[in-house]
Image (tube, rainbow, N blue to C red; front, side, top):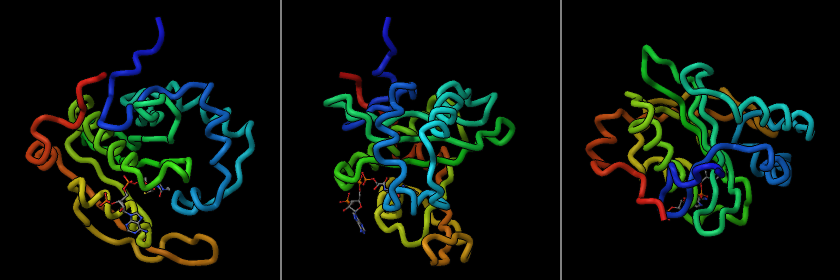
Length: 195
Ligand SMILES: CC(C)(COP(=O)(O)OP(=O)(O)OC[C@H]1O[C@@H](n2cnc3c(N)ncnc32)[C@H](O)[C@@H]1OP(=O)(O)O)[C@@H](O)C(=O)NCCC(=O)NCCS
């Protein structure tokens, strides 16, 4: 029996387990400045490094390892689009940090990122039972800030000049959402019925 690919499905994307077969797709886009400048220090990574990373993260357990790292794939074609992750999952607090990235630049600005974050919130709040999900994003990442605000994240603060990317110091904007706010805004949850 194959993997159940229909577990976490939105309007445009589904989130599924990462597989070693995703390595080629990851390597196609990972060592590009226009992706990595938004994800922290853009250190170039070898195929070996990414293979070992994939080996680890593809078997991480949310409660044991504190992380759930998933592939984002296009619902219509099954094409790998990027990564969605919940990190820093801590049981006594029931909170996690969320992150999403659409790796292929030709697939950005088409609604996939917003849909992937909505599905990830569904996983966090309605599957893992989290109380709070927070994220950080560079203060000049207008595209991401726009979708997070539209989804319902609130701005809670700015860590000033904490990032140094391509010779420029930038702040990190912190945003969060509580389970009660999610339940009010999305009473039906954010998964669509799998097709
Ligand atoms: C940020 C990211 C996840 C967003 O996903 P996406 O699929 O490109 O975004 P979407 O198409 O869902 O939504 C983009 C929104 O931003 C708007 N937008 C696009 N470019 C913009 C810009 N330069 N400034 C402001 N808004 C912009 C779009 O109009 C759209 O808003 P709308 O729904 O009101 O029309 C994706 O672009 C990405 O992975 N970027 C590189 C890595 C990254 O930044 N990761 C996030 C780290 S916090």
